[in-house]
Length: 305
Image (tube, rainbow, N blue to C red; front, side, top):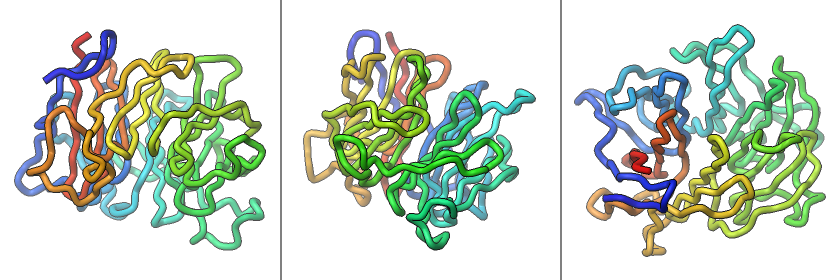
């Protein structure tokens, strides 16, 4: 089965992830990232926070047993010596941790004590993290106080903002965050899920504008001039450099199935998503999508043209 439009047409593969008998996927509530070797890292609610797959879907590693449950957002970065790292936001631990690709914890950022909105660590429930070209981190507290926080690479707090100066008002579930390097100056883009929109900001948090037309956008992922936004209410949207819709993938026509964490496999359909929560492209342009689902659902969309 093929879905999409010219320039973004994909072949659906719902049997991509190959797990040995002793490993279960568990619920999928989190994120996907792809490294420079096209290895695919998937958050799960199973025994490990992260499962690592080759491009053909073979499980090649698993790590983060102590971080399992409530791990949520990831981004991949390259440090000054050229090594790739993964930042993982964990709303149950109330922190964001930098890992090596084999799962060694290297750095932890805890709650922003300098922000007056917080009085204790438990109020900080981060859902996403992104890193700017200069190394600054941007963390979205999507399940806590609904602020966005900027830190230096060493973890020093810089500033926080809550969207109040923008036309959409205070953030409500700033669930995803990304750094838009497609334009200069570089921008921060926040997926404000409960406002059904993306909000664009300068790197220091000043409001630039919004992008409407979403149901419940979950994540921001850039590749080249393209932006993919998994939408919890049953579809994936791809936009161009001007934030115009190129195509929408897997739109679920049944409102009762959208954002339904408990939907069991007998109701899953090829070509139709349930609750897209994470997505990532590889270097070939193939797209991996994670549905929010209690039994775990990962779909590979093979780029056709």
